[in-house]
Figure 1: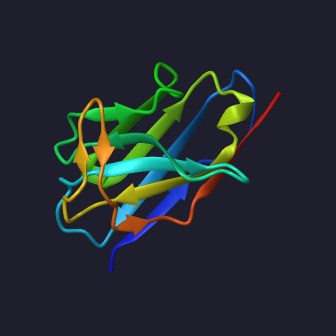
Figure 2: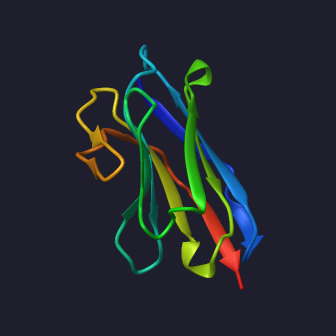
Length: 128
């Protein structure tokens, strides 16, 4: 059974930094696409950043480029999202997703497809 668990959210002041972690268990391979998404109250869920199956390609939403960094530790089956220079508009529930079936396509310009497994989310609140 695949399990995705996020951690690391919290309350931070504008301009501050937070690192989210996403641990995946129940998957035999460590080469599959993963991604971070977020959903703010009253808004639709949006892509934040994705990492390709090889771990070498990253996609970032325009709104976070230059501020957020996605990375992964395959030995730990863990995905990270380093968030710097946070803004109040970054306030949202952040979700991690994994695609062991390798159906999602990730390049520097797109993150396309449906992730199969999702975590429960971790809240990030940025105060002004």
